[in-house]
Length: 351
Image 1 (cartoon, rainbow, N blue to C red):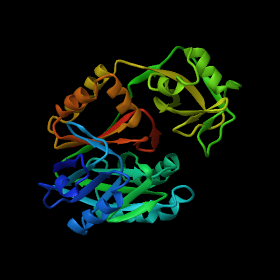
Image 2 (cartoon, helix red, strand yellow):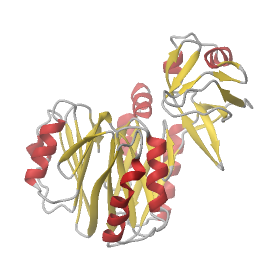
Image 3 (tube, rainbow, N blue to C red):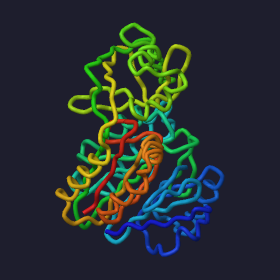
């Protein structure tokens, strides 16, 4: 298979599409002002080609913050694209669409992946989608776009998740998740006074969540939102840790980017040697896939901000380019199988 990346910093779709011929699956990353026109123009240019899109930043060797990026697969790919609607209330109502697409594309855990762009309620969406995917062992990776809108096959949807099932007819696929954080001290907290709908974390071990965070890290209210880059919370999930970013201070509570439930056990995390961890990920992928056709990744907005503040973002993209054709987008939350995580990187590698 082949992966195409085209972009325009000024949002010119024709410029971004230069050199793209006979795509078999297309992903559109646009800006909020041009999203609708880009979706319509892309469908007109490549009618009937499975496509998904969202509002967000794309990257390859540089980041397109407010223009348009096109990522497309061709030459040995079988794909289908669709949406599950009503994700805030009843995404399972549309699960037959996914089940039909799985039948159409065929494939297995060895050669097929599901890539999704979500408009919200990610945890529920992933649980729903994965009930269908796990019957074939198919992995999922993706992320959340901006402005609560996604597209599929030339149509725009709100309160929906757009997905693409992609089968590599020339080799294997495999998904990865990268965590650049580890546990800080031996702090363990039981969450309470949570508001699941608004992702509010009210108390930790019976005390104000905001005050607990401030007392441990010696920060002010104003510093909490930047300190989450270095010290997010973590939720233990088997042998894995799901990262939970802080969105804002809400009275004596903390609003997060991921749902926290009463009685969840949380830990506090700290930033590790992210440069070394990235190199470990690259080495692992190289060992698993001596020959690589493409790597598509989703990096969290907070990772993008952290790497940019540290002057590492350009070097990060250069490091990842050592894998070959690497592209991706900046998400507001990352998806890995049935897990919704923050401040992480997820990717899929095609042989």
